[in-house]
Image (cartoon, rainbow, N blue to C red):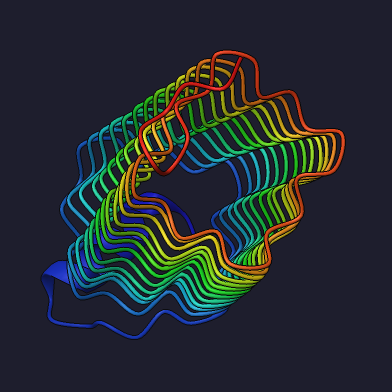
Length: 279
């Protein structure tokens, strides 16, 4: 089926086009909203600027497709494959992307507020300045992903894997990262105030000048983490492992540190929980 036939039948009221082959199709600026393209082949398709509100693309093949500026609010993309796709400025608000493959996808400035990305694979994806407030990324993979300056306020990333992930200057206020793996991730100047990070793995993680005010890091491993100049005011660090961590000039006023392991930690110039500066 070619694009002309598809749009003709769509205009006549037909909506079910599951498993259709539209590889390389040009659907720029088209408006096939509420269409059913479940399991369709859209590899390399051009969907720039298309209006696809409520579209069903469950388990569809969208590898290397160009979705720049497309409107896909409330779309169903569960289990779809968007590896190497371009989705710059794409609107995926409240879309379902559970279990989707977004490996190496370019999601720069994409709108994914309230989007379900549970169990999705975003390894090596580019999500710079992406809008992910309140998004669900539980158990998602984001290894070596770039989320620099992304907005993840109140997002849920419980048990997510973020090894070597770039999160510099990202906004994660009130986010849930319990049980997440952030080993070797770059979180410099990140805002994790009020975030829930219980039981996290943050070995050798870069957290220089990070805002961890009121964050819960209990039972977490921060061995060798770089926390120079970080704000840990009223943070919960009980039972956490900070052995070998760099805490020079960090602010830890009123932090909870019952049974915290600080063996070999660098505390030069650190403002301790009692307000005194460590010499």
